Length: 183
Image (cartoon, rainbow, N blue to C red; front, side, top):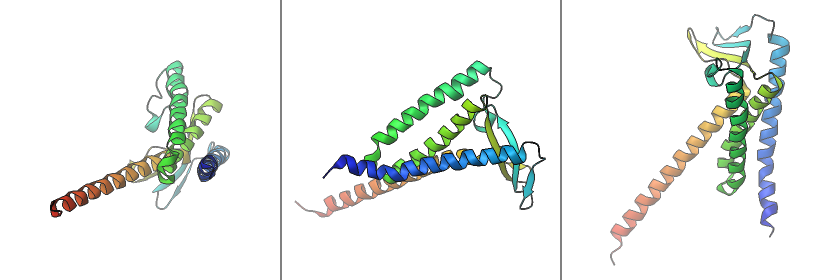
């Protein structure tokens, strides 16, 4: 049995997920650029969902947008590239952990890579175009890549919680078996 071939075959869904998310994110950003850049924005569902064009020079919630160009480049291009490379290496090394674990990493990688592509091709900016909320309680403006990063992070946290719960149950079961097993 060729184990290397099985590992490669098992990566096909992850590669497809990565490529699909990146294409959808970049396509949606391009569409937002065409349709929303010079438009006042659109409101849906009693203003709980908005489509509007924004260029984000910072990170999450525009963190770091006021930094100098050099610091922003170092933080959002250089360090992001290093972080994504490390995450890619982790995903590659973790492929024996199962598809569920690698799927979370893939979601984060796809979102991060797509936003990094924006920064490289749009002068250090990421195109954002969605906003949700009720009344004055609103999110920042975000994009599909941001949703992928958030979904991947949530997925990994959920998987971690499931593993801990299973481990706790296994430990309790083992302890009860030891207590009921007279030697």
